[in-house]
Amino acid sequence: MTNPALATMLGYSSSADLTNLELSENNFLPTYPREQFLENIKREGVVRGLESAWKRKDGSEFYVRESARAIHDSAGNIIYFDGTVEDITERKHAEEQIRLLNIDLEKRVAQRTAELEAINKELNAFAYSVSHDLRAPLRAIDGFSKILEEDYLDRLDEEGKRLLTIIQGNTLAMGKLIDDLLAFSRVSRKEINLTEVDMNALVQGLISSFEHECHDRKIQFSLSDLPRANADSAMMKVVWQNLLSNAVKYTSTREIGIIEIHGVIGDNEVIYSIQDNGVGFDMKYKNKLFQVFQRLHRSDEFSGTGIGLALVQRIILKHSGSVWGEGEVNQGALFCFSLPISGGKFDGE
Amino acid sequence: MANNKAVEILFVEDNPNDVELTIRAFKKHNLANRIYVVHDGAEALDFLFAQGDFGYRKDYENPKVVLLDLKLPKVDGLEVLRKIRAEEKTKLIPVVILTSSREECDIMESYRLGVNSYIVKPVDFDKFVHSVGDLGLYWLLLNQPPQE
Image (cartoon, rainbow over all chains, first blue to last red):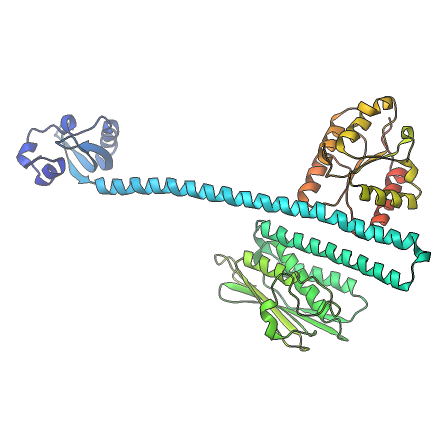
């Protein structure tokens, strides 16, 4: 035990001071894991990486990592221990700092989460209020204007009836706006639930509904084999519902509406597209495409509140994907959206 | 309105406009004489449990159906529903919620508390009249109420 390095570590001036120094009496702390040391020696004959706090000559504490082996005599009794000791005080301090920083971080995360939860709760309350309270007066306006029409039929001329029809039309439009706003806010508040989505089945189902609804029109849907997606299936349904609805709406002036749907697997993403031969739009306004309540056509040309694409974008962004559109006036439109493939889950279809 | 001994529909609604529109809709289907209107949750409970001003209803029959709005002053719709389902005297009465809200939480909570039907009042009055007619005919004529 006359190692100069050990002398320095323990705060002695020279290794000579270490002779006859009984470590266990002078330099160990009450916290020294004696039992564990002996246990390890008994079990494996060595101790590896045992960490504990020791005391220097001046009483100051420091951290040590020791490895040791027992040296036996011919009879198998332990004569002494031989090993190495490493001063790990700096590392221990760094670990302690990290631990404290983590606690602080946890506290801040908890605080931020609480703030966000409060905001979300407020939004929920807001949507709830909109749902209940905005609809009632609308119902009254529509109802009483209809009662007026009915009860005063003989006293109303054509103009009077026209005015009432305008009132009623606007109330229904506002009702639809409220519904759309609520749907939009609901999507923003909802958590994504990712599963493997069979896009073929989903889109096919929607196409069947549209075909049924638009039985009086000639629409050709062509659906190529779509790759599966890692997405929230309810939200994907909303996306396709809106994209298809737009395609159907804006091809309504064509004798035969042609709507084609494709999907392709790219690097780390799957891209879906829907192309129509409808009235298209002017690319000059493409920045307004996905904005809430922004429309690129007049409401007497094509009905709509302007929330469909905003809703699609909100959902796709929630999935960390992207959505874009291209079109030309009278030459139709193409809308595409991409979804990330997570962790190489799909090899392709 | 019903002379309240023979009340078949207890209608719980605080908004006077909605009351007027609903009664008019019932009138169109000749069902208006079977309705009694109360304007808040507390009144509804007094009526059903023959308390307060409705003490005289002590031995009267239960209504065939309760039409309940959710947003009510004093005691709200869900609380009324909870109390109806909690008491022996009233727990079997069919309750239909008729409300503006289409919120998932309202619908789920209502069914969890044992509502029999949940109907959203449309903004469109014609549709509303149609729904009320369907409602009235179903619960008063088609549906079999529990025997007293």
